[in-house]
Image (cartoon, rainbow over all chains, first blue to last red):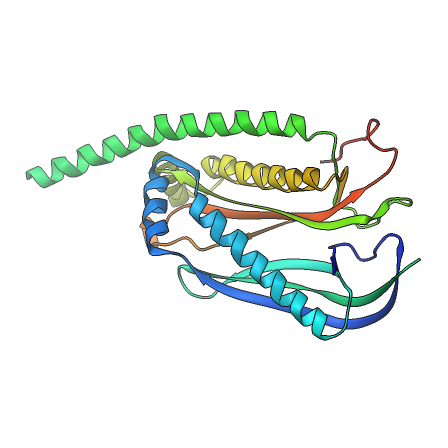
Length: 106
Length: 164
């Protein structure tokens, strides 16, 4: 599965557009990590626990999107975008969406 | 004026000093490290153009991402809190955002470098919020994500014009 966030794939021809595919996940932060983050708010700097959490969440959203694309019989997803929204306090929704297409090498 | 009042004053003072010195040190070190990493990755072309140049190797098209979460220190959060009363520019948060953007970009470029790409197209930034607390105690932190499509453009290794 080829995943890009550009509209076309160089060297490939888009034969068929299967439609919009999407994946989302909502993550709440870990209690232990949150305490560490509270300390970090005094001195500033990177919050590694949160970074890991977000990387993991984004990957999951992406994987769910890819699973959907696979179900549609696509072999590539183009124009991928990520957005987030705050659902409740202390939790974030990560949402990945793109267009599932069937491509063929030129 | 009981002893509780003085304890509050002292802890506030300690936290402020901690924020000024340790926070300032952490920030300066971060900026230095960012400059070093950016110098190492400067040969990768970064653009938010969508068009893919003719003749790039198709197998190198790959989504790359860089995430980072950065918190502000106590002193800066306090200064920004005071500034919010009168409105205007919050300078102390500007450096926070700059650090987050540059760090996420650097991480994305490192991923591109691992894949052997020499350009990243259609770069976008996104941010999210999972910070806790409410009201005045709301923690100031920013979660930044940079993502783009890493590609290989043959013959573009040396004379790359950087567009950042």
